[in-house]
Image 1 (tube, rainbow, N blue to C red):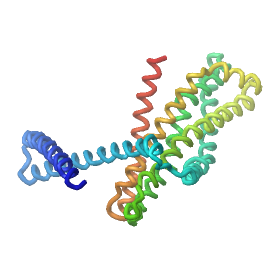
Image 2: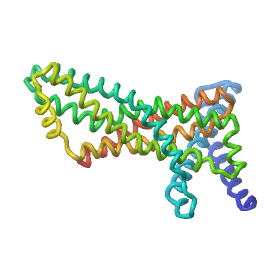
Image 3: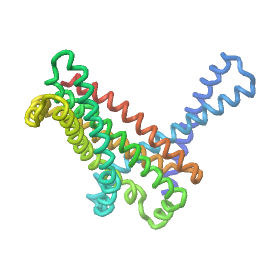
Image 4: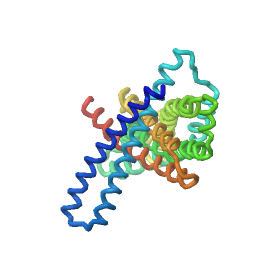
Amino acid sequence: MRRSSQPAGRGFELRSARTASIWAIVFLLQAAKSSLSNAELLAFVSARTLAFCALNLQVRNYLQLNVSLLYWILVAPFTGQFFKIAPIFRQMVFIGVRAAPMVALTAFSVGVTLAMQAAHSLESLGAEMYIPDLVMITLLREMGPVLIAVIVIGRSGSAVAAELGTMKVSEEIEALEVMAINPIQFLVVPRFLSMMVMLPALTIFGNYIGILGGWAVCVSALDFNTAGYVLRALESAETWDLYSGMIKSVVFAWIIITIACNAGLSVEGGAEGVGQATTTAVVQALLAMLVMNAVLTGIFFFAA
């Protein structure tokens, strides 16, 4: 095994070194144009080369994590290597159930705000009857999936990154490897499956609470009754509105948990490294989620 793996590793190192050299030449040309001194030029090239190599390694680790996840979930069970159910349920409680109160409070506030803003804008047009439409469609398509994903990133994603990072610096992951236990199968798979189940469930729950918040405003402050609000909201929504929100939620769940786990497993440098990894996981997951939301919205817009 060692003999077969060494040439591949050397090949990758050569390719990485060659790529880094090319980038170094490019940065040299850029620096030469700006007439930097020799010391500044050397520092500039070194910093840019190290940054590129670190980014290359981070992307490679993230892709390897995703491939390993797919193997342990889709292939390993057919070879007799099953994952345990109990850790999955524990993570579902930690990731999803304990986040439900925060999701409920935030979603209700957003539903109330949407209804009040819609009433203020539509009142001058005499179109208050469309307030349930706006609340329903906005929550199902955009606000629900994005808002719940942001909450889960801040609460559960950061916690997963910190937990795995602490296990990494305390050498617990190395202890698992010594005991011939794969860390991806034992630590990442339960968290991944839990997130893939609980984020869509939280999104449905948050949508319901947000619509309830809109109902509270319409019934208490506007000329609506419960039956009229519910019928108007249901008539405005289509099946695809719910499906598009659920598709976004599943994609967001994949992004959040894989970035959080990758950041936690890549921790170096003790407690300071754990803090940096947690911050990195939150920022990267948030940016990736927002970019993917824009991409999916564009796809759904043109597909419809």
